[in-house]
Length: 190
Image 1 (cartoon, helix red, strand yellow):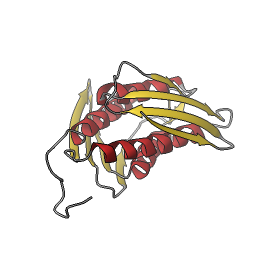
Image 2: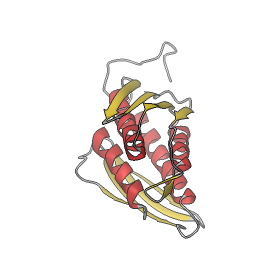
Image 3: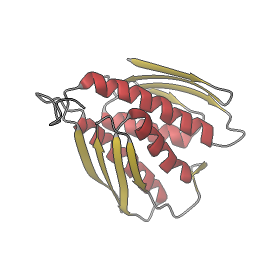
């Protein structure tokens, strides 16, 4: 179990992440039930044990808590994928969720980059500003030092749009972490 703690004037976070753990053994409490639901989808479909307790200044807004969770989760995932090497490195998923179709591709490469295209049709979802979802994925990718491409192809329901994004990333990361013999770079090292 990789543990990351973060304490600022805005948030206090304690995170435990085991990418080889039992996905049924999760305890996620961010103070934002819809965010908890999305993180539960990520952990469940990626096959992770995630223990997360967050106290954030939600009286201000949702930004600090979501951003700091993405920082901590990214830092923990970076440590996890470093320990998992050699792994497949690349992962991708085209994920349907009812009328929504979302594509995700990842590269566990140590070169952080993110291209996120999630075209919400409303400003709020589950009590969270929809702009925060792009910020969450961007912040996670930068702190985990991965390349992340996440694009919704089409949707009608905003809930399905974001849930398909979390699930697509979960399966892409799971594929990228698959064990493989030898290094996955012509450079000899990532």
